[in-house]
Image (cartoon, rainbow, N blue to C red; front, side, top):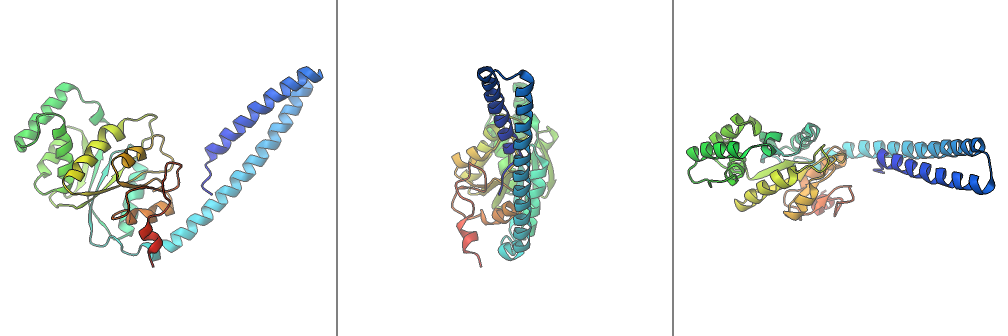
Length: 288
């Protein structure tokens, strides 16, 4: 039902290669002319293409019908599950579409997204001199911060969750490490990470998500995460490693229903990708 068009294209490529080799070998042994072999190959490819396209169309129609059904049921399933909860949203991935999907899901569930923080690519590009300067600026505000780069991690993690770190967040914004919106003077017990990268073999999950999650866990903040089905580099392995709940299909109606149920759920990777451990949290299955 969630068949990806890319899967069908890979299948078609495999068929093409297999048939090509088979036809060429057959042409050698049967001594058919190159033109005859080519014509047979073209006909076979056309037939396979028509079959795979038809299957893809059927899968797409099934998916669209399921999406519509879930969207119709979503208000009853989710209700105002996150009503009156203040949530900080932190985008560690590089796909703004995932952020829009996540905010939509949170607002539909009644949550108040008090701040939205986007970690920029500069986080991964800092020179040692830049890091040292930013750490000095942060320690001027908060002398209790460490004197290495973990000060930056703590400043951001504490800044979106605890009272009294709003100026530290502003320091990170001026340094170009984050883009910010919302109110950083309000404490939050809940954080939603928006992960997933459009870049192959991205280091964002390891360099950004992991240390932030560890810091939030150390100060008692509940963290969950979301990403899109079509991200190139998934952050889910790091979420599993750090033992937090995540949903891997926030761009679908199903993913938007799952997200509000991640808080308090058994830590697991939920969703529809092969990396998912479960499709739905138990709380959603038990909802009435």
